[in-house]
Image 1: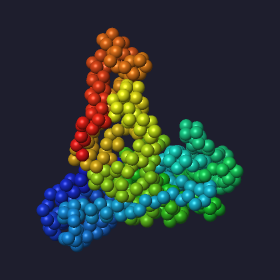
Image 2: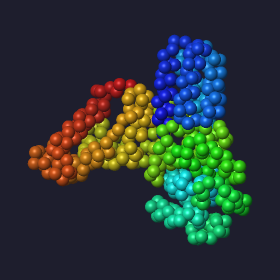
Image 3: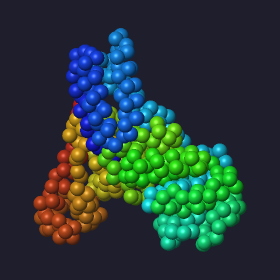
Image 4: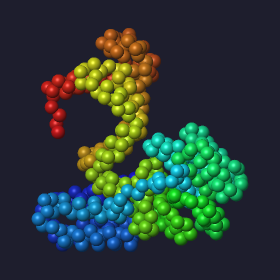
Amino acid sequence: MFENLSDRLQNVMHKIKGYGRITEENISEMMREIRLSLLEADVNYKVVKEFTNKVKEKALGMDVNSKLSPGEEFVKIVRDELTELLGGDHAELETKSNPTILMLVGLQGSGKTTACGKLANYLRKKKNKKPLMVACDIYRPAAIDQLKQLGKELNIEVYSEGKKEPLEIVNNALSYAKENKFDYILIDTAGRLQIDDKLMEELKNIEDNVKLNEVLLVIDSMMGQDAINVINGFNDRLNLTGVILTKLDGDTRGGVALSVRHLTNLPIKFVGVSEKMDGLQEFYPDRMANRILGMGDILSIVEKVQDEIDEKEAEKTAKKMMKGNFDLEDFLDQLKQIKKLGPLENIIKMLPGAKKMGLNNVEIDPKRMSHIEAIILSMTPEERHNPDILKASRKQRIAKGSGTSVQEVNQLLKQFEDMKKMMKLMGSGKMKLPF
């Protein structure tokens, strides 16, 4: 996401840092480049004009006594204004009621039903809550079946009464949720190809008769600036509380995300970052601004690791590594833990300075990790615990069993031994880290 904009803005920031002093002339030059970058990213022209005017005004009034260099101070101004443009503060989901009732609305094809499943999965997995999904899209063929299938995959309950009136379904679902102690009710509503009176009347009927805590509009970020008209169309008729932007991973421009808050005054609460059911993330404006400017997103990396990796197991393995008692069985366990984090290149992109180090476009072949896993799994437990016994005949058997070559087996064993030596040196204090 934001790849094109990020590359352009990072080049501008790198250039401004090289200036010995900041003048009105080079500020104007930078603002022209920033303006072009934002317009090419499909950011609304009114938003671009206001953003660049604010940055220029603050840059011209910079404090000359600042501890930062003029270039660093300019980057800070851009970063702060970008954060503000994206929404400023992180917008939390409402949690005051029990159960908390969320209604998801949007046009047909925006990814609403999938977003309902992803949000339910997020609430259970990240917030340790018990969600109930309610099927109220009674018009689209197979919409109810789709939600039921998602519920089955996630092992999350779906409340459905077929093609009854949506308001009646919601009221019955609310009674059911209270009886069965659900924490959240997620209402998946019908969509249309365009906003029409019948759609709005149905949604308004639910809003007027049910005490909703959140009305979230699900919008496809690939729509570009048309998304703003859709948001305003829904917001004029309903009391929207936030936006879920889907398919942000497929939009290299990201202009909608940069325009939503300013033009609609609605916060982005979640963004879809992959097609997988765990591919929904809370939206943090400051973290996104950092990522766009190449400053990294360490907090998101830490949270992801905490969510996916067993802390006690990781600590136990780390101690073994430092003592040099690490074997291929432990190595296999670590590989499995790392795979839970998703594609490694996505994690690497969140590191500060990834672009500067040439890591922003790095591609890690998942087949390579699969080959390593297959090689280790083709060994006997004794061979994994004691790789020294692996002679030619054993290596041939392992290569054949894993569908690899003896050369790949030898390469893995050498890399493993080198890693063991390095970790032992670090543990003994004889090797100092370069930071």
